[in-house]
Length: 131
Image 1 (cartoon, one colour):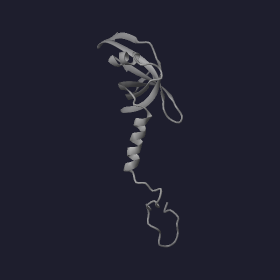
Image 2 (image 1 turned 90 degrees about the vertical axis):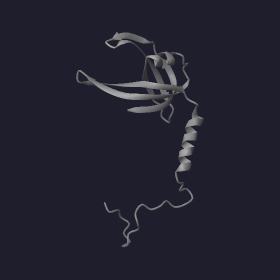
Image 3 (image 1 turned 60 degrees about the horizontal axis):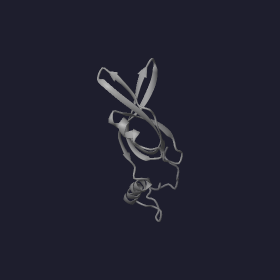
Image 4 (image 1 turned 60 degrees about the vertical axis):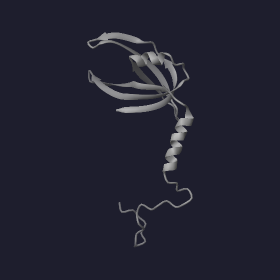
């Protein structure tokens, strides 16, 4: 499952490193606050080169993060991970507004006309829905 969010970097945690059967690994978590009416803080894990990349960003930087959402079971409890696979500096709200504007331009506008009826008017004058 690949998802994306745009948010403001709040905090970058210390790097954690170790060895596994597949070799050396390093991980760094970052806290990002979403940009929406009701902002939410999200902890996102970065592995390998992404861990080094995140260390260079300053708090307050607006980032566009592509990530995978994954869960696993351990001792009858479920744990979820958010793992970043692409991190870019966001071009700001103007980019997201231009995306919204292009969507709105492609969608029909019904503000000055009546919306098309999904169901034909009933012939018996009863306006109740059939269910």
